[in-house]
Image (cartoon, rainbow, N blue to C red):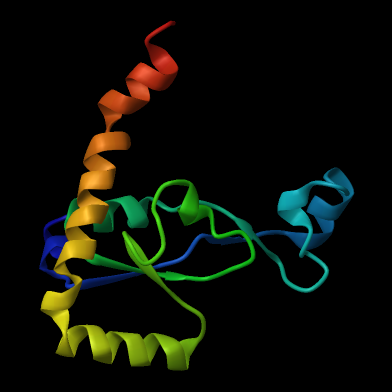
Amino acid sequence: MALNAKSKISIVHGLLNWPKEETKKQFPNHAAFKHLDICSFVPQIKTRTFEAAMSKSLILCLQDSWNMIESYFEPNVDFLYWTDEQDLNKKIDHILKNYNDYIPMINHAYETLINNFTTNHFFERYLKEL
């Protein structure tokens, strides 16, 4: 976390490389695996995204077919998408040259996390009734 806090930008993604053939047999019609014919990735939310928000590092997320990050954070409000290496490099250069312009976005992501996704929220949402 200390290293994240020193990072102005955190590059994240929401994909997991998955065993294609086995999954197609076990889950032939599941929406999460609908793209296995063209790639072997499935959606998976990564903790790195939340670590970036907590440490106030700007979140740059790879845009994919599922965009799971949008279940937690809002694009262009809490984070930015990137689509390919060229786009990523362009955005990094622009952000570093204009970093102060992104501080409101960084702070909003932090507030979104603090107000919705702490362990206390998890407890209240899922464990309290147990």
